[in-house]
Length: 207
View 1 (tube, one colour):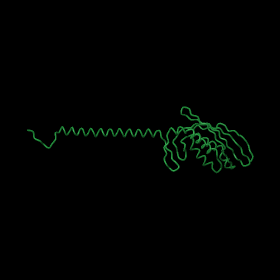
View 2 (cartoon, helix red, strand yellow):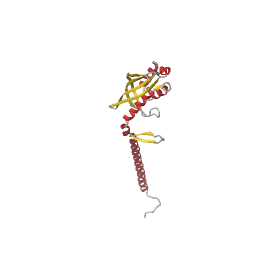
View 3 (cartoon, rainbow, N blue to C red):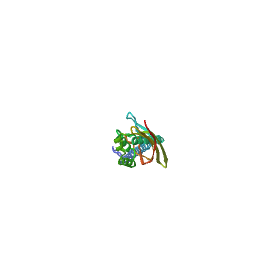
View 4 (cartoon, rainbow, N blue to C red):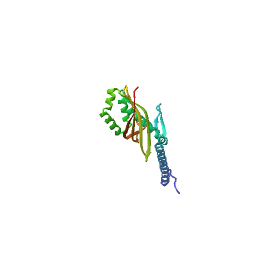
């Protein structure tokens, strides 16, 4: 005759524990896989998304595809901004404008600035109170194998008081994509290999 005891068979207990452990481990594994998939999915979406700051401070997501479609617009705006800062100068604003222009290009722009400074260009602006005013900026941007080159024609006038001279400057260079820097480089582009190709006098007008 078998005696009943309050203790369960040790094998039954072990089997039950094994089932519980298996369920817990499986649940943890599934949870980890799901979390990993969510992180991967979010990462993939973030690769195709960029962010901009609205006028009210709101973060606005923009699709990378849209950014690529708008690259031409941003490149032209960047070039117009640079040429305006670099060439639209007078005795009161040239330091501030040139500082802003140097944020938009690499050492090739800085070298040109230093060369002009050494040649006395900015001293003459101060000495004779010259006003150099942009009249038009026309840029062409081309892409080849992921490399962007540009050619810009800038028409500007130099007001010497009794005489106004008008010039046409042709410049060229390359554009590379960098991190956006607010407010110094809002388009996230950098001008490299910048070079002033030709400078031609168009007219000599007396007011």
